[in-house]
Image (cartoon, rainbow over all chains, first blue to last red; front, side):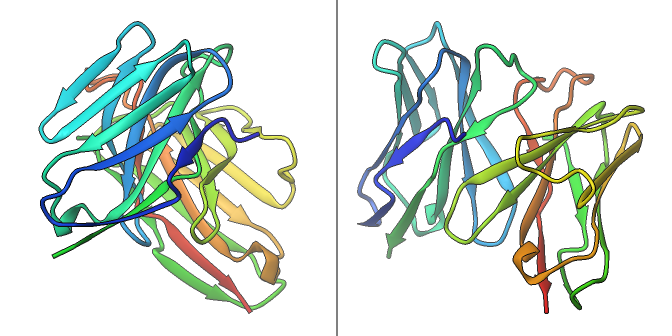
Length: 113
Length: 119
């Protein structure tokens, strides 16, 4: 069964604005990862946050993790038109180890020039 | 990052025919590869875990005889959709972990996907 739920399902913003996407999951996890997918393409890994971490940064990306609420957020600051894509959270659940990732439903982000 | 090549990018076939999709890790060895299926505007659903030199592990509800997986080498896994029907039309994506070159075994590297259309 699908592990993660994301909201919003779709987000439309102007260039320069910040975009925030949320992910909730159901079971205990080893780590949570965010991926990006351009239309009709494969996924690209963005950032990984471990269960004992609360916040992580990578360039314009900021990820938070609240294991007590079983939720994570991805913030993209100063968005660009090139950020237009679908963003998925994925969890490595316990049990299950690292052998499989369960993906959320995704957020479709549209950044308008 | 590591490169995973998936071929073909798209395929159109007649109902009843079989289609083979290849997934190759180009610059690393992948003992495990994963096959996902994705419907438009939806998430990725894990179909099976492909293990080099052994049988694939299928997720519940995925027909083993319908979706044949072969992982004959450390760099190649194939998914064959047998006797394809229109309901098999979907976007299929493979992924792999690089457990060997220190690039982080926890994240997945994805192929570019295969759009299958069965007429």
